[in-house]
Amino acid sequence: MNNTVLITGASRGIGKAIAELFAENGYNVVINYRSSDIKANELYNKLVRNNRSAMLIKADVAVREQVDEMYAKIKSAYGGVDVLINNAGIAEQKLFTDVSEDDWDNMFDINVKGMFNCTQAVLNDMISNKYGKIINISSIWGLVGASCEVAYASSKAAVIGFTKSLAKELGPSNICVNCIAPGIIDTDMNASLDDNAIKELKEQTPLIRLGSPEDIANLALYLASEKANFITGQIISPNGGFVI
Ligand code: NAP
Image (cartoon, rainbow, N blue to C red; front, side, top):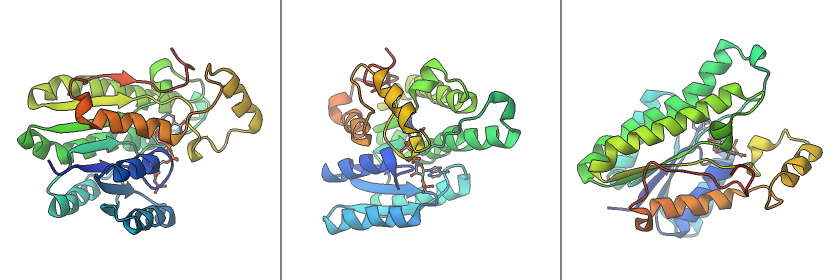
């Protein structure tokens, strides 16, 4: 084991918080992103300045060749990954009748096929090593559904089915596959919500606040650790009590 983690979609939001926390905890951190060059470089430079081990790779998780090239670079630098965090994702709010075929395909290409591509890229080496942790980021909306988010919620429900099935298949190879289904987290993904909507969401949450990216990062660090070696196939939802 060389303690290497690949975090997809780590230029901003939850992925960035995960990258920072894993770096502080001694992991070699591979920051993947698609388009936020400035933010991704800022994060990479900050980690390196603090003497953390980090690598920055621009790749669209929806495109298999880019994912395979990304993994080849990781393999030559670190020998493989011990932990894969399938975090890259997009969301869109629309009436179902307004969702185009392209909208639907784009949502599934990134949120579901991206996870498929990245998992297949790293898996053969994890199986050979008889060790690995895969953590997939779903959403409460994948658990309970959301009006005007049929495509997003469906893609996040697929993440849950993928996690449960793969956990059963990979258990004998000592690879744990788990899923984090966050509640409302304070990131760019919710930037379009106005103050009233945020206030209502907080009021509906027993802990009376939105989650922070760090709330999710802390759980990811635990699931990646050897303390969680008997946990697999689980969907864990840090949501402040919003969904119970
Ligand atoms: P965010 O702030 O919008 O960040 C999304 C990240 O995904 C960015 O780093 C973005 O990179 C990356 N990304 C998007 N498409 C990509 C692609 N095709 N290839 C590679 N990277 C890609 O979102 P977030 O709130 O941190 O969300 C992270 C994950 O948590 C998502 O899966 C989301 O569905 C899930 N989630 C979020 C919430 C929430 O309330 N925020 C709740 C539940 C679940 P670039 O900017 O470089 O393109």
